[in-house]
Length: 361
Image (cartoon, rainbow, N blue to C red):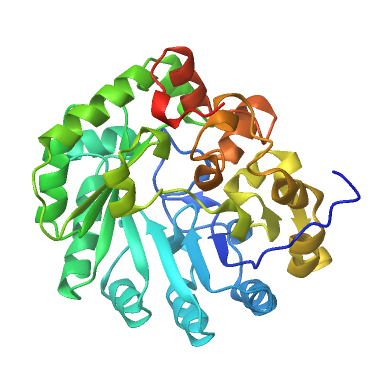
């Protein structure tokens, strides 16, 4: 880092709260790789309310407005419903990612009372397809039961579906399924080779870059006018049309304003800090969130170097100031370089598939 350059510390707008380190499903693609616990949760695998309260109070002074709660599975946390009420009382907006299997009447009411924007993971319109990826027989049926409670409370929610070879030819069915079960939108995430999904990649279950782009193009052509229903296909914005960007935005993560809080009480660059030592920023009780946010060397390096230090095709992309390398955590996991070219984009460029209109010299 150039000592003569004054680093501007942005507000800490969002915390990604990885509130549990366990999950009741054993998903084959999970990049967080939580401990599989079918019944209950071990005391060392969740962050207690007292710790969360202190972190949230201190973070509010840094600009915190939103906490995105994920895991593991958030509803394995024994205090989860109470935590939603307490965080809302602090004036914070809340979102959540859940597998939906543990949503009962109490959980649905808590989501409603606290205006939680939440997504439910479903990877296919049938139990066979969903359970195959989620690693637990009966997961689909339990999620459908959870959605009955969600619909009873008339809650707005999104479905997130992970794209791989096993469901890539069923996306149009997935849209219709999502609408039928009451979702207001569907997000399709491409599975990358990271953590557990490395085994899927070795088995040939992950799609290649040309295959993803082909699925994306065919899927867009299949879609008709979907009134009051939004479909988001999560690929880098360089591959999206200007109309799609104007309608749905760039779909990037806003890394400059986000900090991960892990279930072990540490801060990290999103949840990857659980597995990559260099991206674990330390114990929040010892250092405090203010010190980490303002003084951590990696965070300040990111502030200094994004987007102008991005390498490869990312450094030449016309949308680099918006995309910011798509997912620098994933890039670091693969290349040990935060500012390396995002693998999907670099591979597409090498194959002659990167849009020429998005390349600048």
